[in-house]
Length: 355
Picture 1 (cartoon, rainbow, N blue to C red):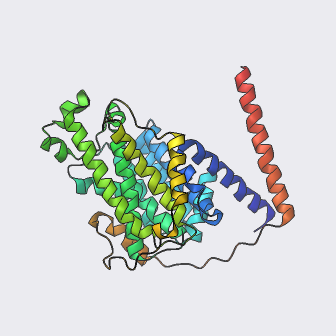
Picture 2 (cartoon, helix red, strand yellow):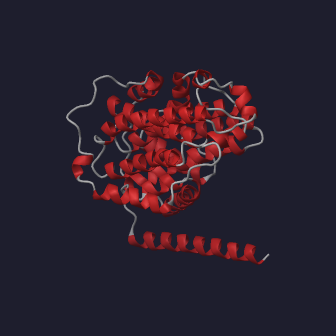
């Protein structure tokens, strides 16, 4: 790798870190516990996912945004990414860790469902959505950590789906005010609620509290099952992924502390509580995430995520040449580039503040 391309890669990583720092506080905190060889590609992965999510969620023409994302992903998978830091960094991750294109393609499909305003009749339908928008990320993270065993990949799907269910439980009011319902419609009808009537005037009621509780309990069961997979990750990765699991599960605890009212307000885990969760994690003994004796022989307990596991099984693993170590002089140059970038950003902020 030339000095120029290496500096470009480092600049791309800096941009991805800044994006994650601003856009995903929970993952940013958890990434601090991962080893650098894992956290960098993980950050690149999350940065592209954040770009994709924002493009569809915040765009005026969501269908057009999905088409653009499909093209960007296709180019990244072919090693010809567009000239964006997130695309270049993600293309590198796809190649280095032999990520099947079907995995990020499923992510874009889930975002396309969002753009269509799709709703979900049953919990199984909701699982199918969670598998695409979050299970895919869990699978890619597992591949980055060097694990491709079907049973471990299945537990990564569990973790991703658990996190998405937590998000849904937390954001019910916010989603409703944007005209969206992610709760299983069947659950709403069982509780005596008409989805359309409730959406027209979203209010917190005991019936909604019951649905929020069901979502959190379902997520908690998946968090517990996912822990088996975390136990089989490389030792250096376990604390970081367990931290992400613990921090997301804490969102559910915060919703419970608010009386399960995620309509009137959006639960936020304070920095102090996040630090407390991480402190408890660091105090755990190794036995808390030591490998279990075995994992279930079957590929996965969720039929809705089976297609992701099958994609990993079918995809050939390509051996990538080891990256040359950066020489001391190159490290100094890269440090200066990062320093000047920070100074330039600070000057721009000062100029805006004076206007």
